[in-house]
Length: 524
Ligand code: GLC
Image 1 (cartoon, protein in one colour):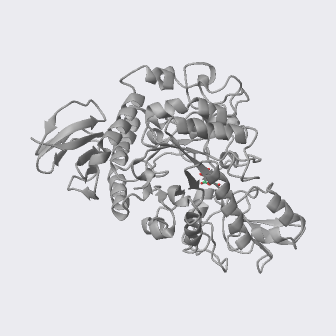
Image 2 (cartoon, helix red, strand yellow):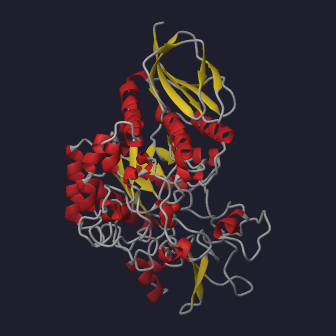
Image 3 (cartoon, protein in one colour):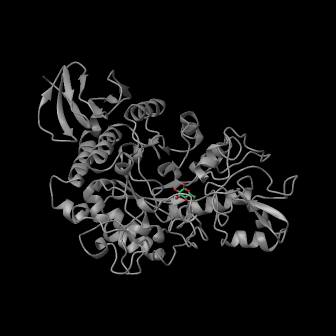
């Protein structure tokens, strides 16, 4: 069985995790120093967001050198120390690979611009203007505006699905494929256990670069999200040929032991699942709850549908560095937190690899960033508040800047309350942190009993009753009590999100609102 089959992951957004130098930006030494905390929490694999040399236009998702470390975060020796310490603590390491686009500061793109006859020109997607002199097709950038920018010097446009300083690579070019084989080998040789593949659904584009069909009206005031939603993205993403790339990566020597986790940012279940197994990816991140307001009936249905399509293929997430934190999205405060935790308990029982986003274990809501302090390019484009609220510094202790830095944080935000910090929650056995840790411990303890497939049993709408081998989870995501019939036999309660207690139950049980329980089979 692969190591990731029963693991729990943790996403470190490196800029905001821990700053060891006082420059206000998190770094590798900061992560290394706090690995003991992650081991204590009970996670198995740490995914670190991009740390490569970068102009930081999209905070590292604009890579200028795929085999280096930006001096902001340390150097290769610090990276090695990080991997070494993780190893000592029994933690695995995953890194973020950004293959869809480079930074415009990458030497390949500079060469491509400097000389249209250079081999690097074909590393990217340059095209002459369309018939009216405008962009070659109607594709939009995720971050606003057309997906094409005009290069005056050559009279051609180049493609970028994100910022203009993030030009898309041409994955039909064998030289690009070879270059990435080397990049993967480089990091595998340095001891990484896997890759989170950024924008995994869009590497290949339709060969004709045809227009996307428009499915909704589009007015000038549309936000980038609304503009994207106005089109059916059949040509700029979701191409079947993208799977060849993942199959190729999995066939590199040693890669069968490395987890390939795709940021398959699609809500379509069949499309997402098509990248698994034969599609080359080991896991695909679950985005069905992403950016959605609380809807218990729909959420439980989504989780059920996805879990039934693939055994072990989804990396369960409800939080990341790209969206508002779940307790905030789920109406805030203790209720939002309890709702998120109820669903997390379900994630923790299902086969697959759940990921904790830093601070999720504390039950954190979004941080507050004043309009004049916004840093995210999406927020700066003034379309919306952007992604800063989920990226505010990790609160370590009730101190100036919550112990994140001795300097001034790169992202200014309102101070966290003392009870939100790790130090305070570690000291309080009743805290969210302790309950979260207990959940991870129960997942680990019961792993040998969670064998076989997932069975969803009859339960009211908005309630999940799921059996995996000898383990039974009931998650009542609704705001009312639920009567649930347990399968025959006795069930001993191993975990409860709310109060807890040792008891064996059978027959019909009453589950309070916004509560989940994990049982194991036991004689009556
Ligand atoms: C992914 C990342 C996001 C980034 C984008 C472009 O969605 O998670 O942070 O902005 O890709 O690379």
